[in-house]
Length: 275
Image (cartoon, rainbow, N blue to C red; front, side, top):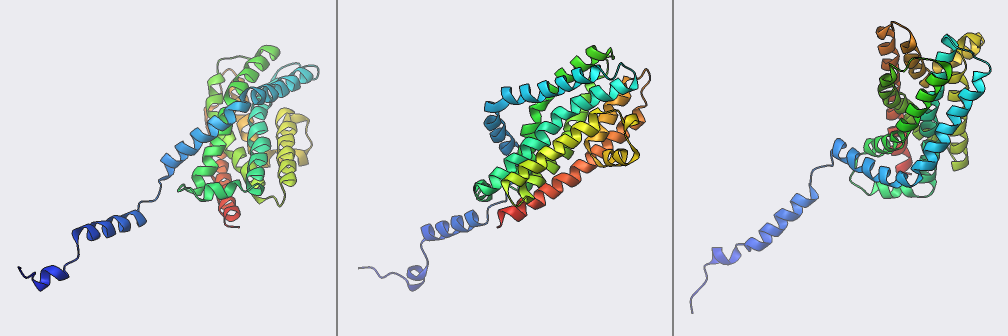
């Protein structure tokens, strides 16, 4: 028989060392990054909302087209028609961002759906931004159809429709943050639905009606609505020589409000998820 040295016998097995090292590495794994998590949530929400895409596009677009046809008997053309077409185009975004998104997050909160997201290694901002971006993506075709129909109805030029490709995401971000915050902060899901519908009604009335016909107090309320600046940005492009500095300024206001509203929605998500 051969004796085993004391130092060798006391030395731990290499397999045990490797297992412990791997376990420690697994416990201290890197946190999920924002942009990959955002892309994953966006794809998941997009596939979920794809089932309701056709009814969603039809309802939002039909509503805006009907409003323009009704206003055709009141507004003949000129600057007032520009605001009607711009406001009706942005209302498509407001219908989804304020109305549907507030209902979605209100239902998600009170049905326990937030518990599912809380167990996933994704940042709260990725959940809010991913859901908002997925719902807003469906508004682009309806917004373009509404704008084209309105321009043909009122005899407005079609040359600057490309501005809507910037207006839709910026106004959508501002309104989506408000809609998500309403759904997450409302004490009951019915109240979340009510707040979303009230917000959409405000965007409809204050955005479609020409501002020259509004009382001063209503104009002040109109200036507080973030979608107003998207309406203003698109309405300014109908002239022969648009002032692009003012257009860029209106878009910058939408972008700033969007950052703030999405930050509030992210805070509301964290608050609702820990309760």
